[in-house]
Image (cartoon, rainbow, N blue to C red; front, top):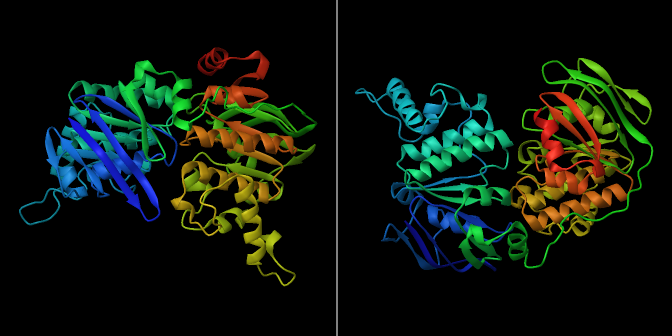
Length: 491
């Protein structure tokens, strides 16, 4: 179905792709794996027509495609579904499916009734549980992804590229997406699958290509690989254990939560967080994990319960009060809630504590802001290394380092971290774990939510388990396994 032969692409000062070749069969789910910056997305942008190639050729079903453009490649049956979904939130499912090609009445007006009928036909054919009249912003992330798939299939897509499709999905939502992908593949639709969650590659894909620094490392059947082998090939070194070893030095209780309740969301949550401790929160999507973090810092109101900070009862009316008390939060949606993407690193790293960068006349001192930003760029190896880099143009791993840095720069004492490595490659994960490790050794305390059980087991001192808004278990790390956590998360 697809051959991309000897593809090369350069940008000023950078060889983004160097002689890449892949071959994908009809109805196959083919994986592209590699760290951020390996060239995966660049290769797919060439396939989509967003970028032109410098050398090489593209063959679709045996036909050589030249003079590519996005419109031409859509016409040829190529659809790309990016991690950042390209939907209009205030429009209906039907309007998004037929965006740019709305049916018209004889008078030249948009025929909304026909559009809804046609959208329903597409959704029914794909067996998607969606209402064509529903507004997209009211849908879950998983259902928005289904809208993207419906939009692609309404254009008779032959090859669908899924670029980090599961970065914001929970386990139950993953199953629904996988079922749709497998069913469409069995009907002859070809998928190219990009994900940092290697477990999904083994569950879903048949063949893969490993990329590093714009070059092809190797290709082969998925069954020939293990997670350890893939990680080793991707990062160019043996990685037996990406979780840093550290000596526990757990101190007094710094945060005490008793009876925390928000009706219909979380009920009677109790735990203590100690100085120098990472306390993990496990559970399935919708279990109430993120809601605990939001309630603690004051983002959401609570109906009952108490929060004590270093022995003092506190009531935060909003996030600002929580921040002033020494709390920081790394949100699940870092691009929507953790960063101001159109601003540079200086702005993002200093904005939580601007008072620190004012002179005696109350004015900001840009030189001091830049100095602090450079300090964390160097400490945490953030790339690109210019403080003036706009965060929207940074990789997911480097963006996450900026989010972590801003709270350290703000003298945060307790850090609430939601999905610390979501959408981050293996090498950057290791660096983020090292940062968390450094913070703990420096006396910070971390309350951490993660959907990846190995991540919790590899980084935490204790793990609390949630199920449908209730706390079902609290374990020392030596007492639990993946099986234990899943049992308490589902029963």
